[in-house]
Image 1 (cartoon, rainbow, N blue to C red):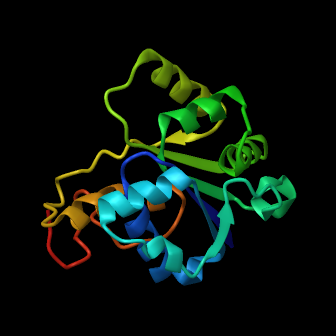
Image 2: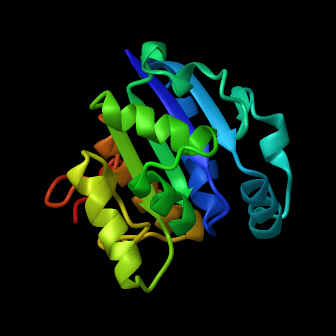
Length: 193
């Protein structure tokens, strides 16, 4: 059974977090523990981009970015998946350099050392050489870099539909069984490509 931590940094892309949490709630039977940790910047970005503070009302185990007593701060907590969405380049750089200065970077370090699944959903663009080398370092360490690059072949009709193409990819990478557009197959709504 999956034990998942969702980490939210201050990069733009709060819509991805909201949709991810909605979709994880819809597949509740596929995980037995779900926790969230948000930076203060992430909360500010959420309020700016989504025009609400609904993150305050999430019915999840919520941890402060400075709470090193969280179960996923140790390998013995057995959290097998960490999704950082969105993942700022600052967070990515600290993870790549092994700097565990907050709960997010510590948990990422734990996931990598335990050879579990780390998915970093980066949103920044363009990339400089430092970003690219940090992405390479995390990839070589076993992490997955998943740029928040929406796909269009499913013909998304709304901004939420477009953002969901990224979230569905993340859920696929995390190993969840979801209904989503599959290239060359029937769509979840019964249509074909």
